[in-house]
Amino acid sequence: MMTLRQGLEKRAFLDAVLGTIRAANLTDEEKGQLKKKYGLKDDANLVLRNTGRGAAGGALGILASSPAVLAMLMYPGKVPQALPGLTMNAASLVGAKLMTDKYSKSALDS
Image 1 (cartoon, rainbow, N blue to C red):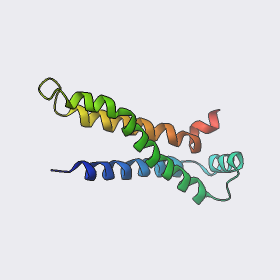
Image 2: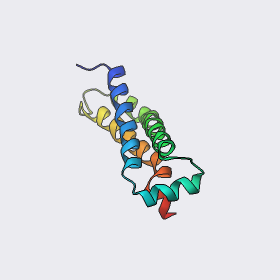
Image 3: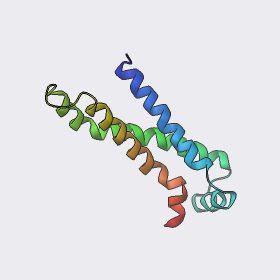
């Protein structure tokens, strides 16, 4: 069984990977546009920023979902056992996605 700390560390790693993948999937033209838009020197800056933003966004998502998760844990017999974990994971993914939008294709659309 995984402890809460291990689960959160794994989740942060996955969110960081999400940020890295979103930046790495850009074409050279898209990377050039984003570097120019934000004044970045090279591709590594773009990837590092998105990696950090992915991890931070995931953490913020988990924090935002904490009141709902705590409320679910207060009623152990009435809430399905997997629901608190699923809620935290979903919130983490949404947070990571929203935070990595700045250095991804979505920034080019705006």
